[in-house]
Length: 104
Image 1 (cartoon, one colour):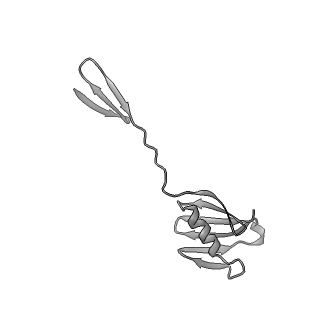
Image 2 (cartoon, rainbow, N blue to C red):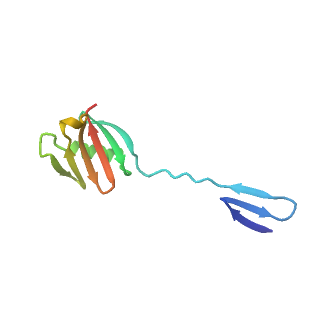
Image 3 (cartoon, helix red, strand yellow):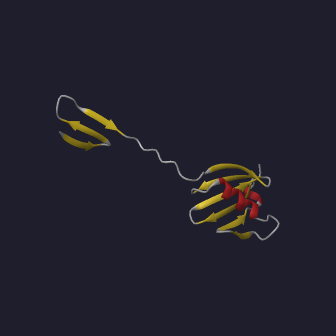
């Protein structure tokens, strides 16, 4: 019997039968990204990276919109938006991860 692996298929040749077996692997990231609902009156969204919604919401909750325009919240640097970019209220970035908080 001869086994060949070609284009993701395992082909067994020999004897009277030929068997083809294919396997598809689907990987789900361990964290969520995308729309995360609301927190403190803001629509929370993960726009880049793999950030759990719980982390995104707690980061948004840690930003004081009445405080300095740029604030450090955990590992994130958050910066308030200008009136011209509304409904975006502020963005928080840490490495490749980015979270936005917008007015609903």
